[in-house]
Image (cartoon, rainbow, N blue to C red; front, side):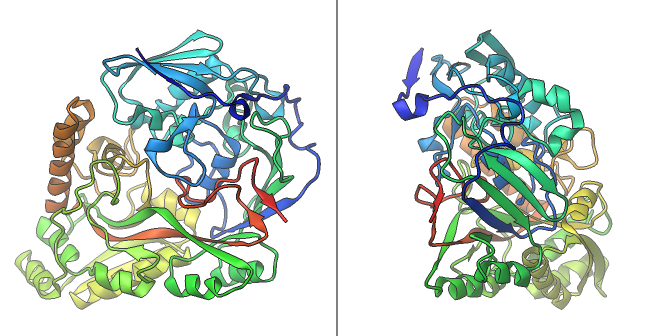
Length: 519
């Protein structure tokens, strides 16, 4: 067995047991106010929290066995979180984690033990309770060896296993008692072990968190977080400039970044991972069931124009149907070139000389709506009429999962391994409106064999080759058209000290830790 041991006094500290209701009674202190571009949250169950507005809040409430270092998105710098140390068998199939002792859940739900970890990982692997269940398909058994030891046995080695037990998506650890006691209410009344505990939710208005005075890394410097939901860009910007907000979700727009970058009391943060925006083409809907029509759509779209409009400092061209920088991304994937004349010729060849009309359910969030309107204009020049059914963001998420849209504009960042993106968006088992649905909006099945073979391939080079083949097949069949990669744009008042160098945001927002402070 190879042993990985990380020990530091600060990391091993654990506070006394939290009494029920203690989160709401936490001592008053400085409140950090954050403005998000959303009308409401979707939910705060980390296994179902897939929306941009949900993920940052989840990161302040929960922990995993390991964690992404605050400010980093690198798999190479993962560090201990609820686990103090771990061992791995030589064949990479058995992992054993030694848990911290004395870590307590919010709200008086008791000490975190191996039973909670086993419960959480099994729940993460269950499609009935998790949007990320396919990530855990290789888990064979999850056992509590004793109250502070967890053993995971895999069917085969998994690329970057530690990332699946990190404080991200299905790796977050829940209180078994809380989930069983709260039932469906857990989705909006989450219980974790993090530096901040859920205190209050006001629909279409805000989420309030209170500092966890018994956090195992130490009592937070802040008294709490007020997460305000402000969908209108102008209203959110005004709240920030007037001092109502300390931190604000910015626009993926270079002019916005430049404007606030000139403010003396403001710091603008442009960070990774980028959210890859794809236009998913539903191959089960006519006329998109004809690959020539899908190729016409791809030829009618110019990434360069989208990047130019949004600004090169906040947007980059996509390189594939997987974001750049992921393990397994083909940086030289054969993307179709922009060619409006070819698009018209392909439509005529497919029997549509006068063009076609397609529809899209589209979110009203300004940043996403503007991007789709650019695409709408480009398609029109090639004889493709794109009708937008604009709805609020929650309705958008609900409807695109019901297979109601010919095309779906979706921007996302995921765990940075090709398997995750390919599985969630392009494996036929993930097709929306099916029992195992995730986010395969296109009904793509072009690369099922390569995607599934790569998951169990022990040779890293052969695995990368399979991922490359999968990308080529998906691009050839035009299951989705890459639009651009939007970097995350945030801004904060210089009175805010995150307590770390904010260079990356795996949770799509700044991590607020026990060290975060406000002058």
